[in-house]
Amino acid sequence: MSASGGTKAIVAALAANLAIAVAKFVAFVFSGSSSMLAESVHSLADSGNQALLLVGGKKAKREATPEHPFGYGRERYIYAFLVSIVLFSVGGMFALYEGYEKIKHPHELEHWYWPVGVLVFAIIAETFSFRTAIKESNVLRGRRSWKEFVRHAKAPSSRSSSWRTSAPSSA
Image: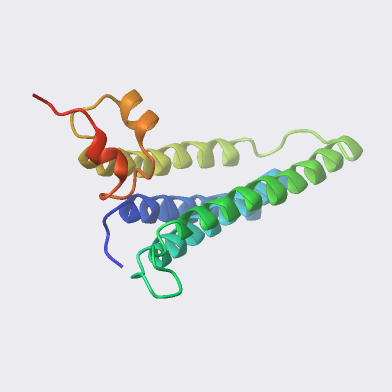
C-alpha cells in the first residue's frame, strides 16, 4: 500500500498511538495506576481504529466489478463507521467501569510523575502525527483556507474527490 491519499497520516497516527500505549503501559507497571492501565487500553483501541481505517482505505481502492459497477470507494465509510462504534461503545464502557471503581475504592494520588511523563511524551508523539496529517492535507488543500477545505471536502484523503473539480479556480 502506498503512503499517499491519507495513508501516511493514518500510519503516523498508528505509530504515535502504539508508542503512547507502550508508554502508558510502562507507567502502569511502575506506578500501579489503574488509570494508566485504562489509558494504555484506550491507546491500543485507538491503534485498532487506525488499523481499521487502513483496511477500509485499501479495500476502497479495489477496481469496479460486475457485482459492484461503481467500485468500492464508499467502503472506507463503513470502516470509519466501525471505528466510531468501537470508540463510543468500548470507550464508554471502560469509562463507566473506571468511574465506578474510583467511587467505590478511592485512594490517594501516588507516583504522579509517571502520568505527567506520559502526558509530555504523548504531546510530542501526537504533535508528530498531527504535523504529518497537516503536511499531507496541504497537498490536497492547495490555496484554500482550512475552513473552506474542511467544509467542502467529501473525502479529504482522496485525490479524485468530486469537491476538487468544483473548487473555485485561483485566477
